[in-house]
Image (cartoon, rainbow, N blue to C red; front, side):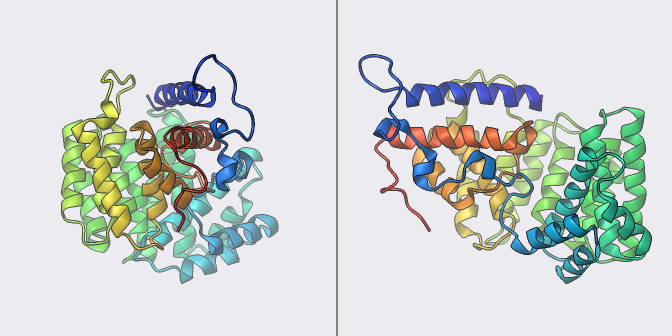
Length: 368
């Protein structure tokens, strides 16, 4: 479904971009570069498509610096130190574990049998290190979802190994929620029975009751395309948003539930303006406005929010979000496509075109 949806979105967005960049008025004529109708994202200081970072949703310079050293030297110790210095209670540790695992997975894909050697050395040379076990478990999960067919024997074998490593990681760091959050993806792939999933979720909630990453992982399990239903996913998201403390981005969870259940073909002409979608968008906007500027979850929410704002033709609001998040595309909805940077760039170009078609310009755009 995700591939079909991505193709449909790309087709629709491309068609709309073409409509906007052609000159309005009498004939059909391509806009001249530099003219008001050209809708050039570069005029707004946005990053070029080839400059977009597909590895992460937002900035984390410490992580980038360490990744550069680890990948250049194949020495795992800087990664160990960074995770050891990252508090286990917050979202940042979970994101960094995902980033290290993703980097190793990408290396292995690019250089089969050789890439990601630093992670294998980390595990073998520091078998009692909690960070190594957490990254290894997440690495296995990503390998299963990226390189295997769901339900096939190799998919299950890799996830069973990930489940074992999650258990090892949990024993090495009893109060850390990350091993249990990683296992939520295992639970989805191995189709844990509901009582077993509920026991796992209770362990997460005991350690991190307001963890956005955990709620996103659990939401997938509850969705119709896995083990639940649309009503079940909506109920889960709504309940989490209702109990979210002030300033928490959990208030945006219903928007992620809406995204998970967007139909393959949108038959309602104003689907993105319907009450359900509008309510979820307003909740996400409120959450973004209330959140701390340095909240590591904020870029995740902004990426999905801007997708809905553009589809709802809310051009000025979408441009505000692009200004805040531009440069990084390692998040849903872009990562479900084969070329996240290209998908993001098309959506951004549409926002610029719509913004200018309604009187906006680089001079009128608000910047932080």
